[in-house]
Image (cartoon, rainbow, N blue to C red):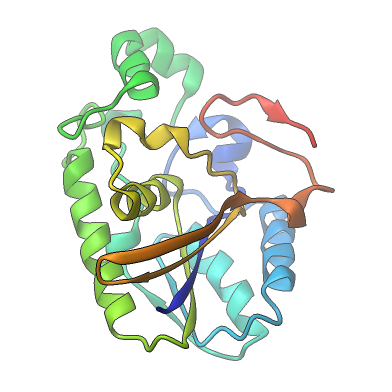
Length: 217
């Protein structure tokens, strides 16, 4: 089975400002995080690097790719879930304007749930991400080692799909900026080695993008 590293994008301006948005670039700290991710993966022998087409992901992927001197391949199917009316809002503003929806999102988003004003449901977003994911793993040999730089919810979709977990439980998988998840997958068979590994970032400091609370190790 191909070995796959899933990388959540490194810190963006929106992350730093406590906003929810898919369209802001990496911060200077995000660049440093990307360098540390690249250093972590420097000797694993990557044969291909894929990313979402959003700037934060492609920049993170480019920094990883530079040490291997290979080109990244962007796929919009790995773009983060569309956030609709929430895009660009702070968590505080969302809680005040959409208290029921925010609680529902944190507690148990079901398959038909969508962000207010968004054009796709969670299951539709998972479907487009998993279609591309499966195409990629089927295009690689069992000895290939690949990297996919994408976003928190997309990684959660992949994990839920591979482990046959309902999407209502997706937020049980923490995904920090710059975290690495490692797995092997081929057809209906998969093995998860580790999830949300941030040992390469311990010296930097970061916060949970879902709750906004700082974490310290």
